[in-house]
Image (cartoon, rainbow, N blue to C red; front, side):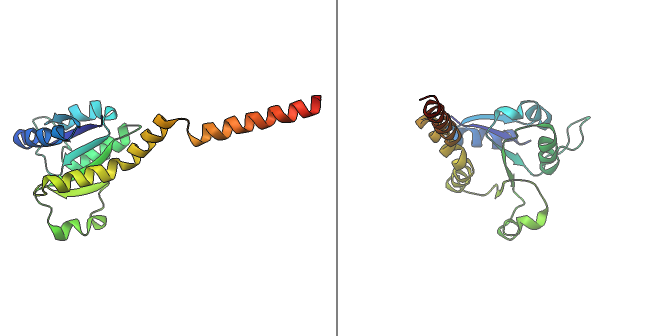
Amino acid sequence: MYQIAIVDDNEAWCFILEARLGQHGYAVSTFTDPDAFLREAERFDLALIDFSMPPRRYQINTDGPDVICRLRQRVANPPLVILISSFFTDDILSQTSDLGLEADAYLSKSVESAGLLRQIDRLLAPKRSLAREKSQGKTDSQKRSERSSVMEMGDSLRRCG
């Protein structure tokens, strides 16, 4: 089961997304405090991070791009990131490379559930195929290593015989 984090200052939005994604088999954790998310970030496969989060008392750098930057700096194996905002229009979303942000995908909060799920599925697809390969047996490098060992044994036997 894939672990998804939702990082947003709007508790109602967190609740809605948690319910929607939970219905589709995802394990979801919500965070209204970006620092709390960063402390646990390594355990997630994907994070939905709000673009605009007002700073809490005694906090700085709590908007989405800052959280992503800190995530990439602090976490050795960070989750995939979808930056989400009610300010994102279709025009802005078509020019995300110009924004200079480090998210893996961008969505408007007005996206329908189907669009959100498609984007999540697209991002998690490589992890799914890797997990499937592992569950079906050995990885390619393990198979190559075993073939190499067998060939070396054959060479040794020929030299002895």
